[in-house]
Image (cartoon, rainbow, N blue to C red; front, top):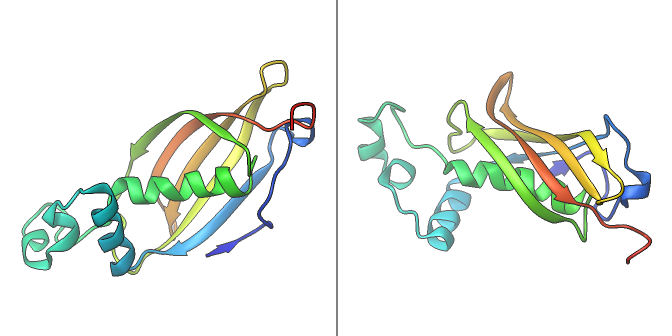
Length: 147
């Protein structure tokens, strides 16, 4: 994985509107197989080349939630980082991710509620110039006052 910042914690007292963090990850066949095993989602569109060739995708695709998990990684490791609690996430899947694709997962701070320690993040994933997923996350950020 390639990301733009070290892993750790940014406390709510230090978060600012417009802050962004990202990571890049190439999605491999092994990633897809492991996700199928852990999630128990063995839909053949993810695992069977012959089956997937005859679908609207014309080939195998990664699980959408595997791609969404990259957003979770940015939130949990970078912004806000360690100690963050997910409160909600909306997702809209725009295009498939295929084995071998490199996904850029990015989050951007759009709102901060200091009194409630809540941060709203615009989230998206892209493969090249194609947005494959977009949404919004609401998280409870760590605070120096409580940690």
